Length: 322
Image (tube, rainbow, N blue to C red; front, side, top):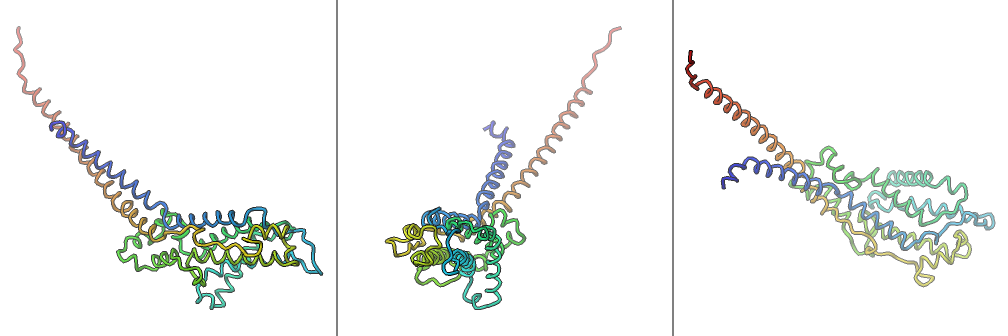
């Protein structure tokens, strides 16, 4: 008991320091990833799906394909790839946006410019174009579109999101479930029956529909005696993308990661409480306790020194013997 009483100041300081370190760790750990990490996991699953269903080297647009009757099948293949960029970005628009010609024209031009930037040098040089590599590039185009036009929270880490002006107050708002961002997060993570999906912001359904339409389109071209010559090996393309040589492979939502945006929203919210509120609070308590302890220590030393001097001055002098 005496030992505890004697070391109570050190124990209290250790408790305050432990709480400070714990809350800082929890704050950083819970808020580090955010909804952006869920987006990245989804992107990674799309890349993995591409390698599974469209293997590298199996579906290749042939740069050496001979024109047929003055018709360049290679140029037609390039145009199909260009349209894939356009269809990709347009597939994410709501019906209301699709009905707006200004919006549609803007994103169509944006997709075309991005395609030219990524592929113009290759197709002008009549290089072979591997659809596997093209598909991965299309995923990166998705990321580019998201960063340019979608909410910052979905494309950056939790800590990056917290650093944006207004994010902390948004996260700490008790009515956050009714906020536009939370509602968007909920809609983005929702998965409906694929047959009922048309277009919009259901992320998983959207990507499943887009990929399946692209695979179906490739199979249709490869099966055509004339257009199939655009591929280096039309039969190999059919073997890779069909189940029986005829029916196009179709992926499902189970092939992709299902993002939990609302869970990460709530987790980041808790992390902000630890990081922005509790950590600074215990930091200030630690500093205050240290200053008080230091002042008390100085006063005690001053008192001891004063008492020592007083005692020294009161000590009687021994009589001198002459």
